[in-house]
Image (cartoon, rainbow over the protein chains, first blue to last red):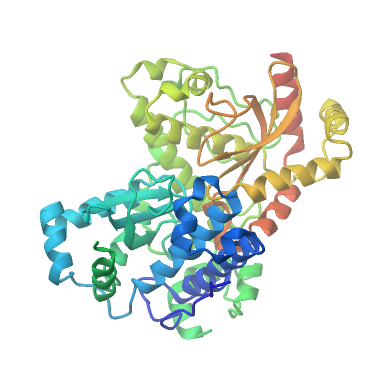
Length: 203
Length: 278
């Protein structure tokens, strides 16, 4: 099995005050860990065990539901922790900034579109910035633990930025005020990492 | 756990959670209970109390059941049939307050807005649900959110718990075997609903049979998008907002606690009403 549960790349209280320590601790050690455990249990002893997670997602419609839900939960949180940083915030630079301007008009226009995707996802889910197969950028959202790599997604691509809008991601601090959590997210985005993801996604 | 940081962020929670498992789990020093504590970072000014036109919910002692036959546009936002702290310790005060006063109220307001000035305003909400696949998604999400929470609050009671009686008890035994088998099956539906949603006990209008199901988001068994349609008589909200402040990732503990506050007389009354309509 080539999957490992990753350590959080910063301390649980590192994202304060935007995301509180207790939320981070439960989110990583309980929710994320449970997805990892259930995902590895679901693929253990099956042919999926030797595949990459991208390959698994590209045929997720034929996989058991436990693989879809827990594999998505495992992968999505891996990406989420990476694109956050206590030193985050600001705006992207380089080629990513150019691509955002060219696709959405401006960084502010992009943020508005992303905020809408995150605020309007009803129930549990994620908002994404992904790179499509023609190298263009795309903002979308997905239900539950689905993501744009899954063959069930209506906007397929490689996600480079993800925002968890399950209530467990923000409820202890923000309760019903999801827009405030979304707003706080921008103070934490690790644009260097997102740019790296973008460069790697280009074909 | 850095107590200083924790207390800075959660002092209002700690005040209301001083006796909860949450407080014990994170080893917060007991804080003197403040009965008037407000949710963190919220202001009373954005609450709209003037939307209460007429009480639709029955009191916990009532058993009349909600009347859904009025046009949807005339339905009122019902009062909670008990105090915010009445369901402690099964469901904590702050959760009930935010759940009712923010989430439920927002669904009601958004539903009212979505049907205002449309033909849907003159239809009973149950008729709207029966045609929900043709409706705008805002009607589905907010209409469901409004209706489901009324059903939920009404089938909870500080004096709840125990087991059902009467014809409902007989029917449960007949269809599920022992009461504990029914509980197991209902809990399974509630635990395995991935993401946000509800668990239901409903009556099939075709044959009067009971059935257990779950639905995503704010869908319910009255909607024609359901795998099996029926009249819901018992509802359990398994959105994280229903339990996260007290139970966090431990949904199973919340589900166990639910049985201690089920208002079985109301569920029995609904069963008899639904059965008579078949």
